[in-house]
Length: 308
Image (cartoon, rainbow, N blue to C red; front, side, top):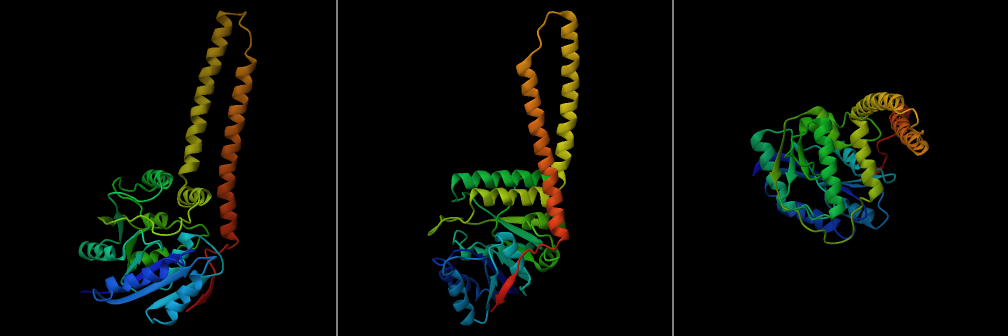
């Protein structure tokens, strides 16, 4: 037995077919292996019967806390909502779809306990997601490597464990567009990983649509880094140098060959190219300013309707 208090936070969204069995499996696999176990179920605006099931679970088990959010805020705000109510020495974060087997939690606990990491991520030999979701995950991991100097071999899995220090620092973040892994890497580099099993989804479909994945990417890229702004400056400098070289080439070519006709199509093409880039850059700057505006106007990360 590991003499530590363990909290498990599960953001729940339309998981009526899995959440009861998943909760039971968490207790069956951990209760005899840890000093104390606390399960926090965060209902993130589910439109099915998930809320009633979670409420019934919490009403019949004093070691389960049910948190109902006022509407759907997204996975990362829901997790942060749950982190405000944990009391464990270590906090496990996992999805509601049973793709992360509860019996693998003990591997995360052993790794963080034995090596004194702040955070331990799970890693998989094979991910049982749709190939488009896997492509998106690889892209996000590449962006995180560039933005946060994340270790190349570290996969940013949603199935992970945090110690008390990491949890305490994460909940200090008050911005309205949280990306948990961005918050973590702004706090610490003392992270590790452990190999676990990843299972195919048994029932239902992923709640991550393409627009939600884009929103998640923007939260990572914009909320926790000014790298996009720096990228704009680099692209602007490249365009300026390229334009100067092209202009010199045009002048020299005209001097060598005075009868050379002016190219209407190339001029229009360049105008459209640079106009499009200007709109893109202005939009990106507007995104930063808009998020700053919403932050200053205290847009909430989440709103808790009830806690049982």
